[in-house]
Image 1 (cartoon, one colour):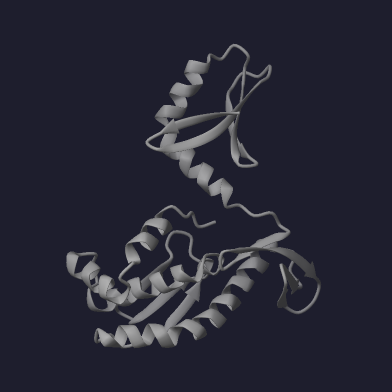
Image 2: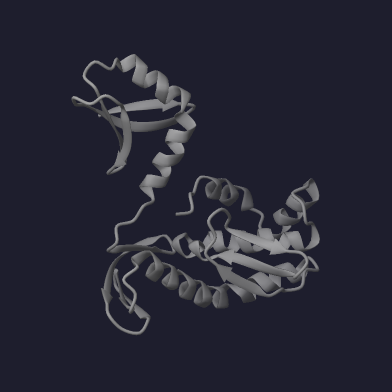
Length: 220
């Protein structure tokens, strides 16, 4: 297996030669599989990868985060997922999540678990968050939960409420703290100006490393 490297990033790839007309790019088991005609020159493939590198890399990172149906990630840890038929409920025992559901849609079941996990975890972290924000003159606002496709959270100025992406239940708890502080900073400073980041620095002094990490995480 080879690696295509650019701008400090790399994509492992494997070329398969078959009697086909076109060239296909697919992600399997943590690497890019390129299926192409025996006559296709390597330089042509590498040139195309170079031109489309950012798109290839984004899809590669996304593919690494995909879970199998019998796996679930909660708060940065991976678990086996075992489903039985019944009214929705779940229990975490050791490295396994046992879930009852009448649905056969595994992704829907996982999102139900994410939402329940967020409800429980927010109850645990909100006292500390409220203490910190009130030191900056920010009053707590209602928090809503929703599975979002494009962002980890948002502050609705008109309704004075925060919406959190339940996808956060897949990540380490520290990112829940970061998103909460980020959205609460918008209560006082609605844009992303210097004043906003100064306030966020007061709320969470080490926020920059978590902000940088989240930009690399694809919501799936």
